Every structure is written in C-alpha cells, then in structure tokens.
Image (tube, rainbow, N blue to C red; front, side, top):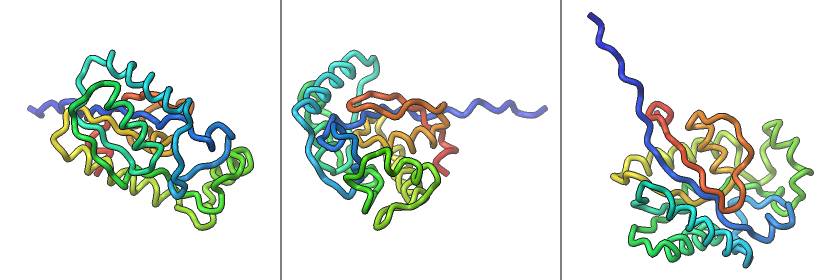
Length: 188
C-alpha cells in the first residue's frame, strides 16, 4: 500500500510595505539604492497599520526589516504603537530592487521596460533581485520564529507573492498588511 502524501504545509509570514515617501507621493521610481524617509502621512499610515496588526489573532514574534530608512521607520513605528517586545532584525536581503538610472523617473516612463524584463542601467536584474529575496526568505524562515512580520518595499512584496504562488493582485499599497503562506518547496 502506498503511503498517502500529506499536503505540504507552508510557513506563515506577515508582510507590510513601508509608509508613504515623497517619491511615492510624486509617483516616481524609488529603488533600494535610494534611501529616503517617510513623509508625515507615511508615519500616520504606519501607525494605522500597527492597529490592523493589533487585531491580527496570531502573535508576531519578530519584526524583520530592510535597513532602508523608510522601512526601518515603519518597523519602529509599528513596534512602538504595538508596544511589542519582539526583536527588530535588519536584513539586507529585503532591500528593494536597485533601479539605478531609473530612480526618480516617472513610473509610467519605465513600466514597459520593466514589464519587458529590461535591466535598469546601473541597477539590478530581475533574476538577481528574485534570487536575493528568495535567499532572504530561506534565511528568515530557517529561524525559529513562528510568525515574523517582514517590513520592506513593493517590489519585495511582489517577489514574495511569486514565491508563495499567490494569485496576481494589485501591488502592495503603502503600509498595506499582506499575509503570505510560503511553501517549503518554493525555497529550494
């Protein structure tokens, strides 16, 4: 008799995109090679997101963030608002894709190039970006956290969604909380 295979269980994570920055407000590209702060509105968004997280049933046991100012500040505000004692960990693998010469350009001016897979001059290829985020997820999920909160940028959310096999959705909005279930096979 063949042994029945159990369905593969995934590892849950929560993801939040950083709050609004000036580049977001102006609808221009902002890669991981640009380190800008949150706007005042972005700080308010981060605090509101913390209230959403407070209502989440499962306890967050680690906050893991990109070292960029916009993500660190979002993580700090969430931790402060929640009064959360969990550790705050910086992870370089969660830095947004480096966009080189496309930073500061109108999003619409470069979207067709990104969609076609063109690498940004002086930036990071899509393949290198996906490999870096995949490695970061493998590292994070190899730690003993039951429910980590990852704080990063929109491109990181997009790649995590691809890795998780999630249905295509609208890109993550500023300070949007997104649950993901990461299948173990997706990281090998």
